[in-house]
Length: 48
Image (cartoon, rainbow, N blue to C red; front, side, top):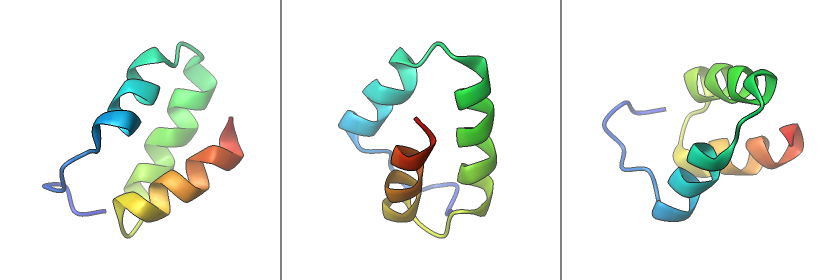
């Protein structure tokens, strides 16, 4: 994912509200390999 891409407000809120460290770790790894914010959002829904 482009490191300068703007994170949509709804996604930012979801990330900030997440307290489970295992899910946050998985999302972090997903963010590293995702090609776009849209791809991250599609994939992160499968992790919850």
